[in-house]
Image (tube, rainbow, N blue to C red):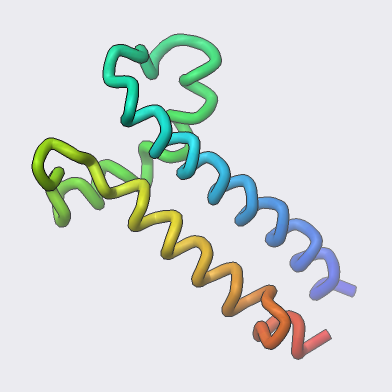
Length: 93
């Protein structure tokens, strides 16, 4: 029961985070966008928590911020490991 609830919450949450990071990648193409204004702040707030420390480790390469790309990969990997066809939580249920 608890495992099913965890899976039903974790799946959409990880999917939403992937979507938000992809949206951040698209927003990097438009540097004039103010991330402190609505509706962009809805994307910036939940992702910036992850991107700030990542930028300290991996600085922009050639002026391109690749930290959202790194997080799309990390969140996708975690989602696959936990919820994929052979995922840990999938196998336990």
